[in-house]
Length: 241
Image (cartoon, rainbow, N blue to C red; front, side, top):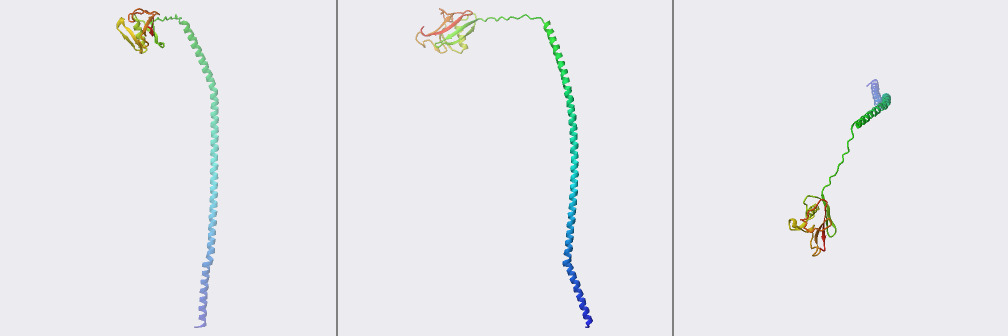
């Protein structure tokens, strides 16, 4: 080969090497710096966008606050106006009430006077009634008592009936007090043996029941002794005959 061809080949090879080295250099060293710049640029753009967004949001929130404040102020004004109107109405009604009350009182007083005068005239027109005197009719009765060993066992007034006997009066009083009466004999010959379980001979051979009319002992049996209105009959248990 000629020397010129050798030098040209060497030169071409060297040029390729240089071109390859430059490409490798740009690929591995120059590109990171550019990517870093792009990243920083992107972050700055994002930050700026966020700042603008926040500013816009603040402006919107301030506008909303202002609107709310305006609305509240308007509502307060309306409420004040309503309160004023209600107070005025109350004052007017309070002024009117005493007048109406006074008129009502006047009307009531006049009506009361009219009723009182009409009542007086009616009372004057009505003639006085004669006082009615009620006389209680005395009921015919007989007073009967039953006295045992320990004291009075029963006593009360018995309605008088024509032909009532001393035994009849005793039986009515004993029935009212639910006291049993044991007897012997019948009719006018009846004999009282016991009253409410207190029997003859319970306190000795001479003990038994006797009766008095107006303080005296009759000589007839209790069935044959007729009573009069107002008589007092006393049945007594005697221990010595």
